[in-house]
Amino acid sequence: MKTRGLIVAMMAMGCGAALTAQEAVLAWEATKKFSYNIEKVGVTPMTASSWTVKVIFSVTNPAPTADFPDAFWDIKNALPLKGGSLRVLVGWDATELTNTGSRGNLNPVATGASSVGAALPVSINALAAAQACTVALCAELGATPVAGRYFVTTTVAPMGSVGNGIAAMEGRPICPLTGPVVPGCPVAAGVATAANIPVKSVVKEFSFTGGAVVGRRQIVDIANCKKCHDGGQHGNTVVPRLSLHGANRNEELKLCVICHNANQTDIPYRTSGAEV
Ligand code: HEC
Ligand code: HEC
Image 1: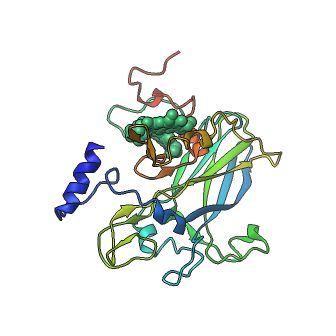
Image 2: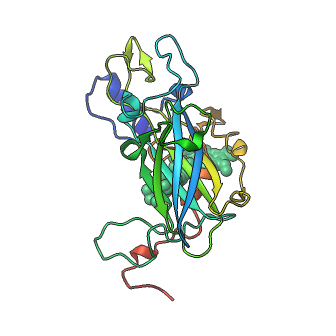
Image 3: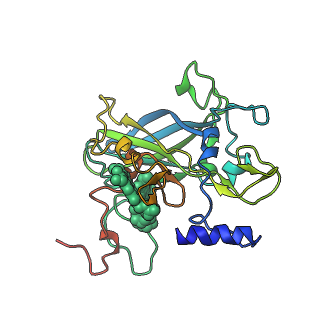
């Protein structure tokens, strides 16, 4: 709260210092212009234990208005999207998400080497890697039009048997600087204001093997969290809406558990070697 007060004070003083992702204003109101959609997840077996996963997605504008009538966002060119972050995650397995083998192995990394933690999902920078769908490239969509849709692919090799997977979209459009009106960005006194837009994250469960999809077991219901995390006053405190990791991961607990799983330990960083 103190930090927020300071930022407001800095902005009021016209201080030009750039806001960091964590500090930037969360424009919840602007989220009504953005919807992440995972339209299809296609799985192609490659070898006995590896699959190519293709995620077809779009970012739509559920509230077209005269100043921004488009139904789909151009993720490569529209300013708040191309200046922000958008990632597609792929994780597995069924009632628990363990993502075994997502980083190849669980060996400790060399001291000082940078690496990812254990059991994190495969994470794809969709802004860089996505290709626009064409009828030929996204035949999976069948009769659904391809305009406005994109896809990313990754080959994953889960360790051991695997049945179910989960794909997710996370990320935040960014309204970088206060200035000319930018579609999708909040406007105050005729100018766009700097903000992060905490678009609701989405997930889609799928089957690697073609069998019935068994979703990850549900433990908590976000409706209960929202009884407090609604941005409103509760007693003597304002409880913010659930937005973590610099506005990238918002109001979807099925997204959180793809990374925050029981296998996500410090094993890659144990420099004393593997434990038995
Ligand atoms: C009874 C009210 C209440 C409920 C219900 C509740 N929370 Fe909270 N939560 C709080 C308060 C108060 C804070 C501290 C807010 C702050 O720091 O400004 C908090 C903080 C958090 C934080 C830390 C946020 C951060 O930015 O570090 C997380 C994560 C969180 N809650 C998740 C959840 C989840 C997930 C649920 C539902 C399973 C939930 N909460 C349900 C009141 C609640
Ligand atoms: C792509 C992987 C990933 C996802 C998805 C993810 N987290 Fe995290 N989270 C991490 C990692 C790794 C850390 C520890 C390192 C760090 O703090 O960045 C962490 C740390 C945290 C922390 C402690 C530090 C902090 O920022 O306060 C909280 C609380 C947290 N996550 C909550 C959540 C919630 C709630 C969600 C879903 C809305 C979520 N995370 C989604 C990977 C993830």
